[in-house]
Amino acid sequence: MNRTCFLCRTFLPFVFACAFPGAASAQVDRKHTETLLAPFPREVYDSTILSPNGRRIAYVRPDGKARAAVIDGKPEKTYQKVDGLTFSPNSQWHAYGALSGGAWRLVVNGREQPPQNRVGTPVFSPDSKRLVYTALQADGEHVAVVEINQPPGKAYERIFEGKLVFSPDSKRLAYGARIGEKWYMVVDGRPIGPFDFLGASTGIHFSSDSKHLAFAAMAGKRWCVVVNGKKQKLYDNVGRLSMSPDGKQLAYLAGSGGKWLVVHNGQEGKPYDAIGEDTLRFSPDSAKLAYAASSGGKWFVVVNKQEGKPYDGIAEMSFSPNGKQFAYTAKIGATETVVLDGREQKIYDRIGGGTIAFGPDGRRLGYIAKVGRASFAVVDGRRQPRYDMAGYLTFTPDGGHYVYAAIKGKKTFTVVDERPAASQYDAIWTVPEARLLFDSPKKFHYLAVKDGNMYLVEEEVD
Image (tube, rainbow, N blue to C red; front, top):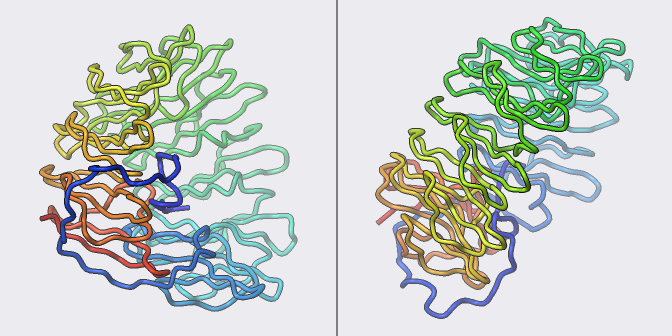
């Protein structure tokens, strides 16, 4: 689901504790506004989604045996079932599948589309101008990809994993489809193949300029990466694929003879016992390629083929926005530390997963750490006040301040440069990136729960 809740779900999963004596500075009554969005009872928590801009909320409300989508507090038509609720990237549109009278329909901003036997989760293009979904045809055996305001596409026996992928410029569409016993990648309406199977976890990847397409496919009993319709070398297995931000490079994981290696622009790297599936990444400037590898029971980072110091484990890895700095979390026995450009920071019991944050120019670094039951931010190497929980750490767009959310007792609030806000809530929600969202160098916003209602809170840095 496209939201995170800083109360019932966070990246430091430990239980709430009593407040720590002397844990925080005096509260500050920062300038802020609260706009009521919707009633927010606990029974809708699991179905709740937030818009990408973090300003809207939608959920499915039970009504006896019926269901209704509620958008910003306004209920839409009641149906037997509601499924696949989603917002468009620009946050202006919403869509979902709805069952009524034995037929499914896609509903877009309250408008019903033609009935189908079944519909899949709607997918918006990056520019929010196109919307596609899968639809089970009348014969109950074939599935077609339907685009709003366009004739249905060709029907296939099956659409692979329901994955429909737009190119970054929103002009191209790719998805896997089965014809007979073989699988094809359908790109711009034309099938590429045949293949014996397609990679589920490896995904479908367009380059940033939308000109190139890569995916993993099975040929016989082995796997290969297919680039622009051309099969690359066969391997026993293929893992994560990664396209560089400039669209000119491709890297992926390949398994052969019990070892794993990285293939970068067709060149094989050194084989290792294992490579972290989610660690393969390019720097924002496309100049560096990094991943975590294991050999002899130890883990280490590899950046442009250079191996770092071995540790008991490697967790989160992050490049600064300019690509010049590189930080990751390393496990040392039962403890963890952040390593910045090869230099170990202070050791803590735990570093919060997904919490490493760089300032916009890469000169500042922050993360969330834990010692015992205490959670706190660490900014520029300096430990901040202790709370029961802390998270959503980010820097202002000019890099001059840092902001995060914290829990003390049963209340949640924001903290700016060690100064906690006087305004407190039952929970704070934000988008999956787990950051508070800035609208200007001094203003940020988030959604907050208070007294059974959801509010849009807009706050100003002092």
